[in-house]
Length: 437
Image 1 (tube, rainbow, N blue to C red):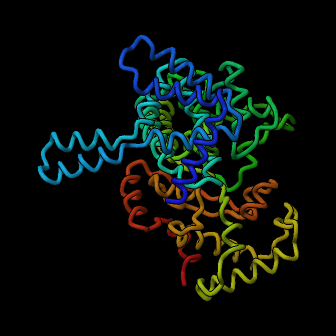
Image 2: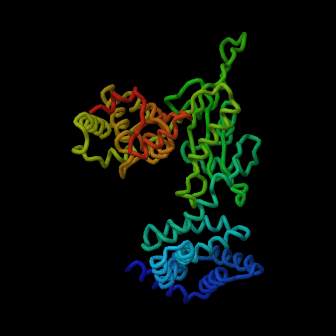
Image 3: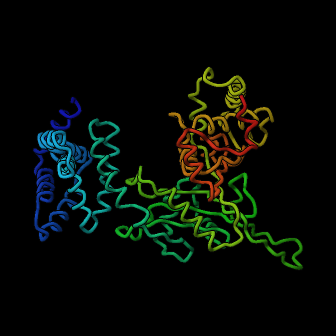
């Protein structure tokens, strides 16, 4: 109740600003407009008004959406009582109608104008920032997520390969939005788009030149245990003897090594799982030699978990491994690639044990690794854990150099997804030695 009163007070104070009041009035007119003729002009006015708001007025705008564009409480009570008295389909339809917040219709009408979709995404980014310090805005975010999940349903999206021949503006966005393994130059980007590499993205009709999400794939002969060979430039040194060029065997393995979301306003809208499955289907038809679909993934939540974990909550072997690893890390600070290379075997074993245990036993906890949750919930199997796989500054800080393979058996993904929903993590037999009590 207090957060509701605070939102009311905030929206009231903001209305001393004439420009802000004009925006709110335009929103009310847009929702109440019955004819089609003025909808476009009103929606355009709302878009322009939003684009002119300062950060503090953005927060006030969300307060208005939460209060003035909420369902009518009296109408909801009356409709609910009518349904209780006579639970007919008509009564249920009436109840459903009055419980839908008017702000949902506002968002739908904004979405009809030029730039409306992009504006709604920018609104949600600002809303999520406001929610960190302002309570009571969750209902507004739920309405955004409800509509965006429908509008960005994969069935409405365009699936496209990204190649070196793609428009330069699109390639620049790939460089800009790469979130896992930074692309340092155009030369590095070109390597990731060569014949043994692939890149695919989803696009929305209202954002034709803006990738929503993209995945990078390497076509190899085996499952890799480190990232450097996948993203490094080809060697420019000619072979010592090249009398007869050797025949390169066809690839048997597709490695998903990076997936990046480009639109923060779509947080919570499930796209990555659909993209991976769509890419796997596409590659299966394009490259007949492929037999294995696997990832090489970071473990960004591991070190955070290790710092927070209470040794008393671990098994005796895990507690001993945690003590050994933490003691070694305390001496080798900041951790470097040389430190990892010289890591004693008992410390390496401790790192393997703890990271595997973390992924198997804590993927449903508050400290679950987000990448692990994504792939395991998507029906993948935890296949292998590799120490020294990522010695970049980011990899050392987040996971002490560890990376993980998640195997996608296309015929078993549904069963493994169901297992994960039941709080079971499916993992390869080779990892059992690290998860024994």
